[in-house]
Image (cartoon, rainbow, N blue to C red):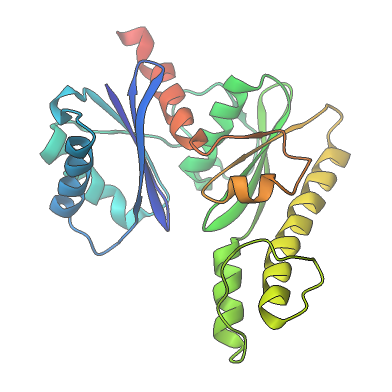
Length: 258
């Protein structure tokens, strides 16, 4: 079995695969203060709770945008799975060609998303990842990764608003009864939801104006379904796209060796 680990700034995504089949997935909070044993115990505990034997894992593919935790997870994998994980970066074999400045600076999660999107949707595609940051990445019809856009995530924006505006209440992120809020809570909810809908639709429109080919749009991340209900431009939602990308990348770099 293959274990995929995507270490994000807010959450760490775990996926367990048997061949192409996703057997289970988990999302845990990313904590830079945790030690290797703590992460190892948490992951093994999740396996045992779901009736999976950790000893059946024979490979681990990992991406990380938190350098401080990369070595922590490597040690946890070595200690609790006896496996040195395969780390994804711009140098590994992929089905996309990176056509941006400074390829080594791109996040491994963005690469995994692009690879998965290319495998699942053969053609020009834009991947929107709604996480700590909201990222937009474009792969052309020819398989060129040409870049994208990075905006603050809705959580960051909401926290900034609440911390700087003393009289505004913290609100639940739900759709208000109307875009025109009749009270402060609904007004804040409207600004957060429809403000980000406008951001997403605006960037997609500008991307499409620059590409000659038709461009599909895939949304991923914890809030993908919340927004897809309100944005007709989104063609597909895949909350586990990054895990799928890590599986594809593992296969591309190891199948010929098996």
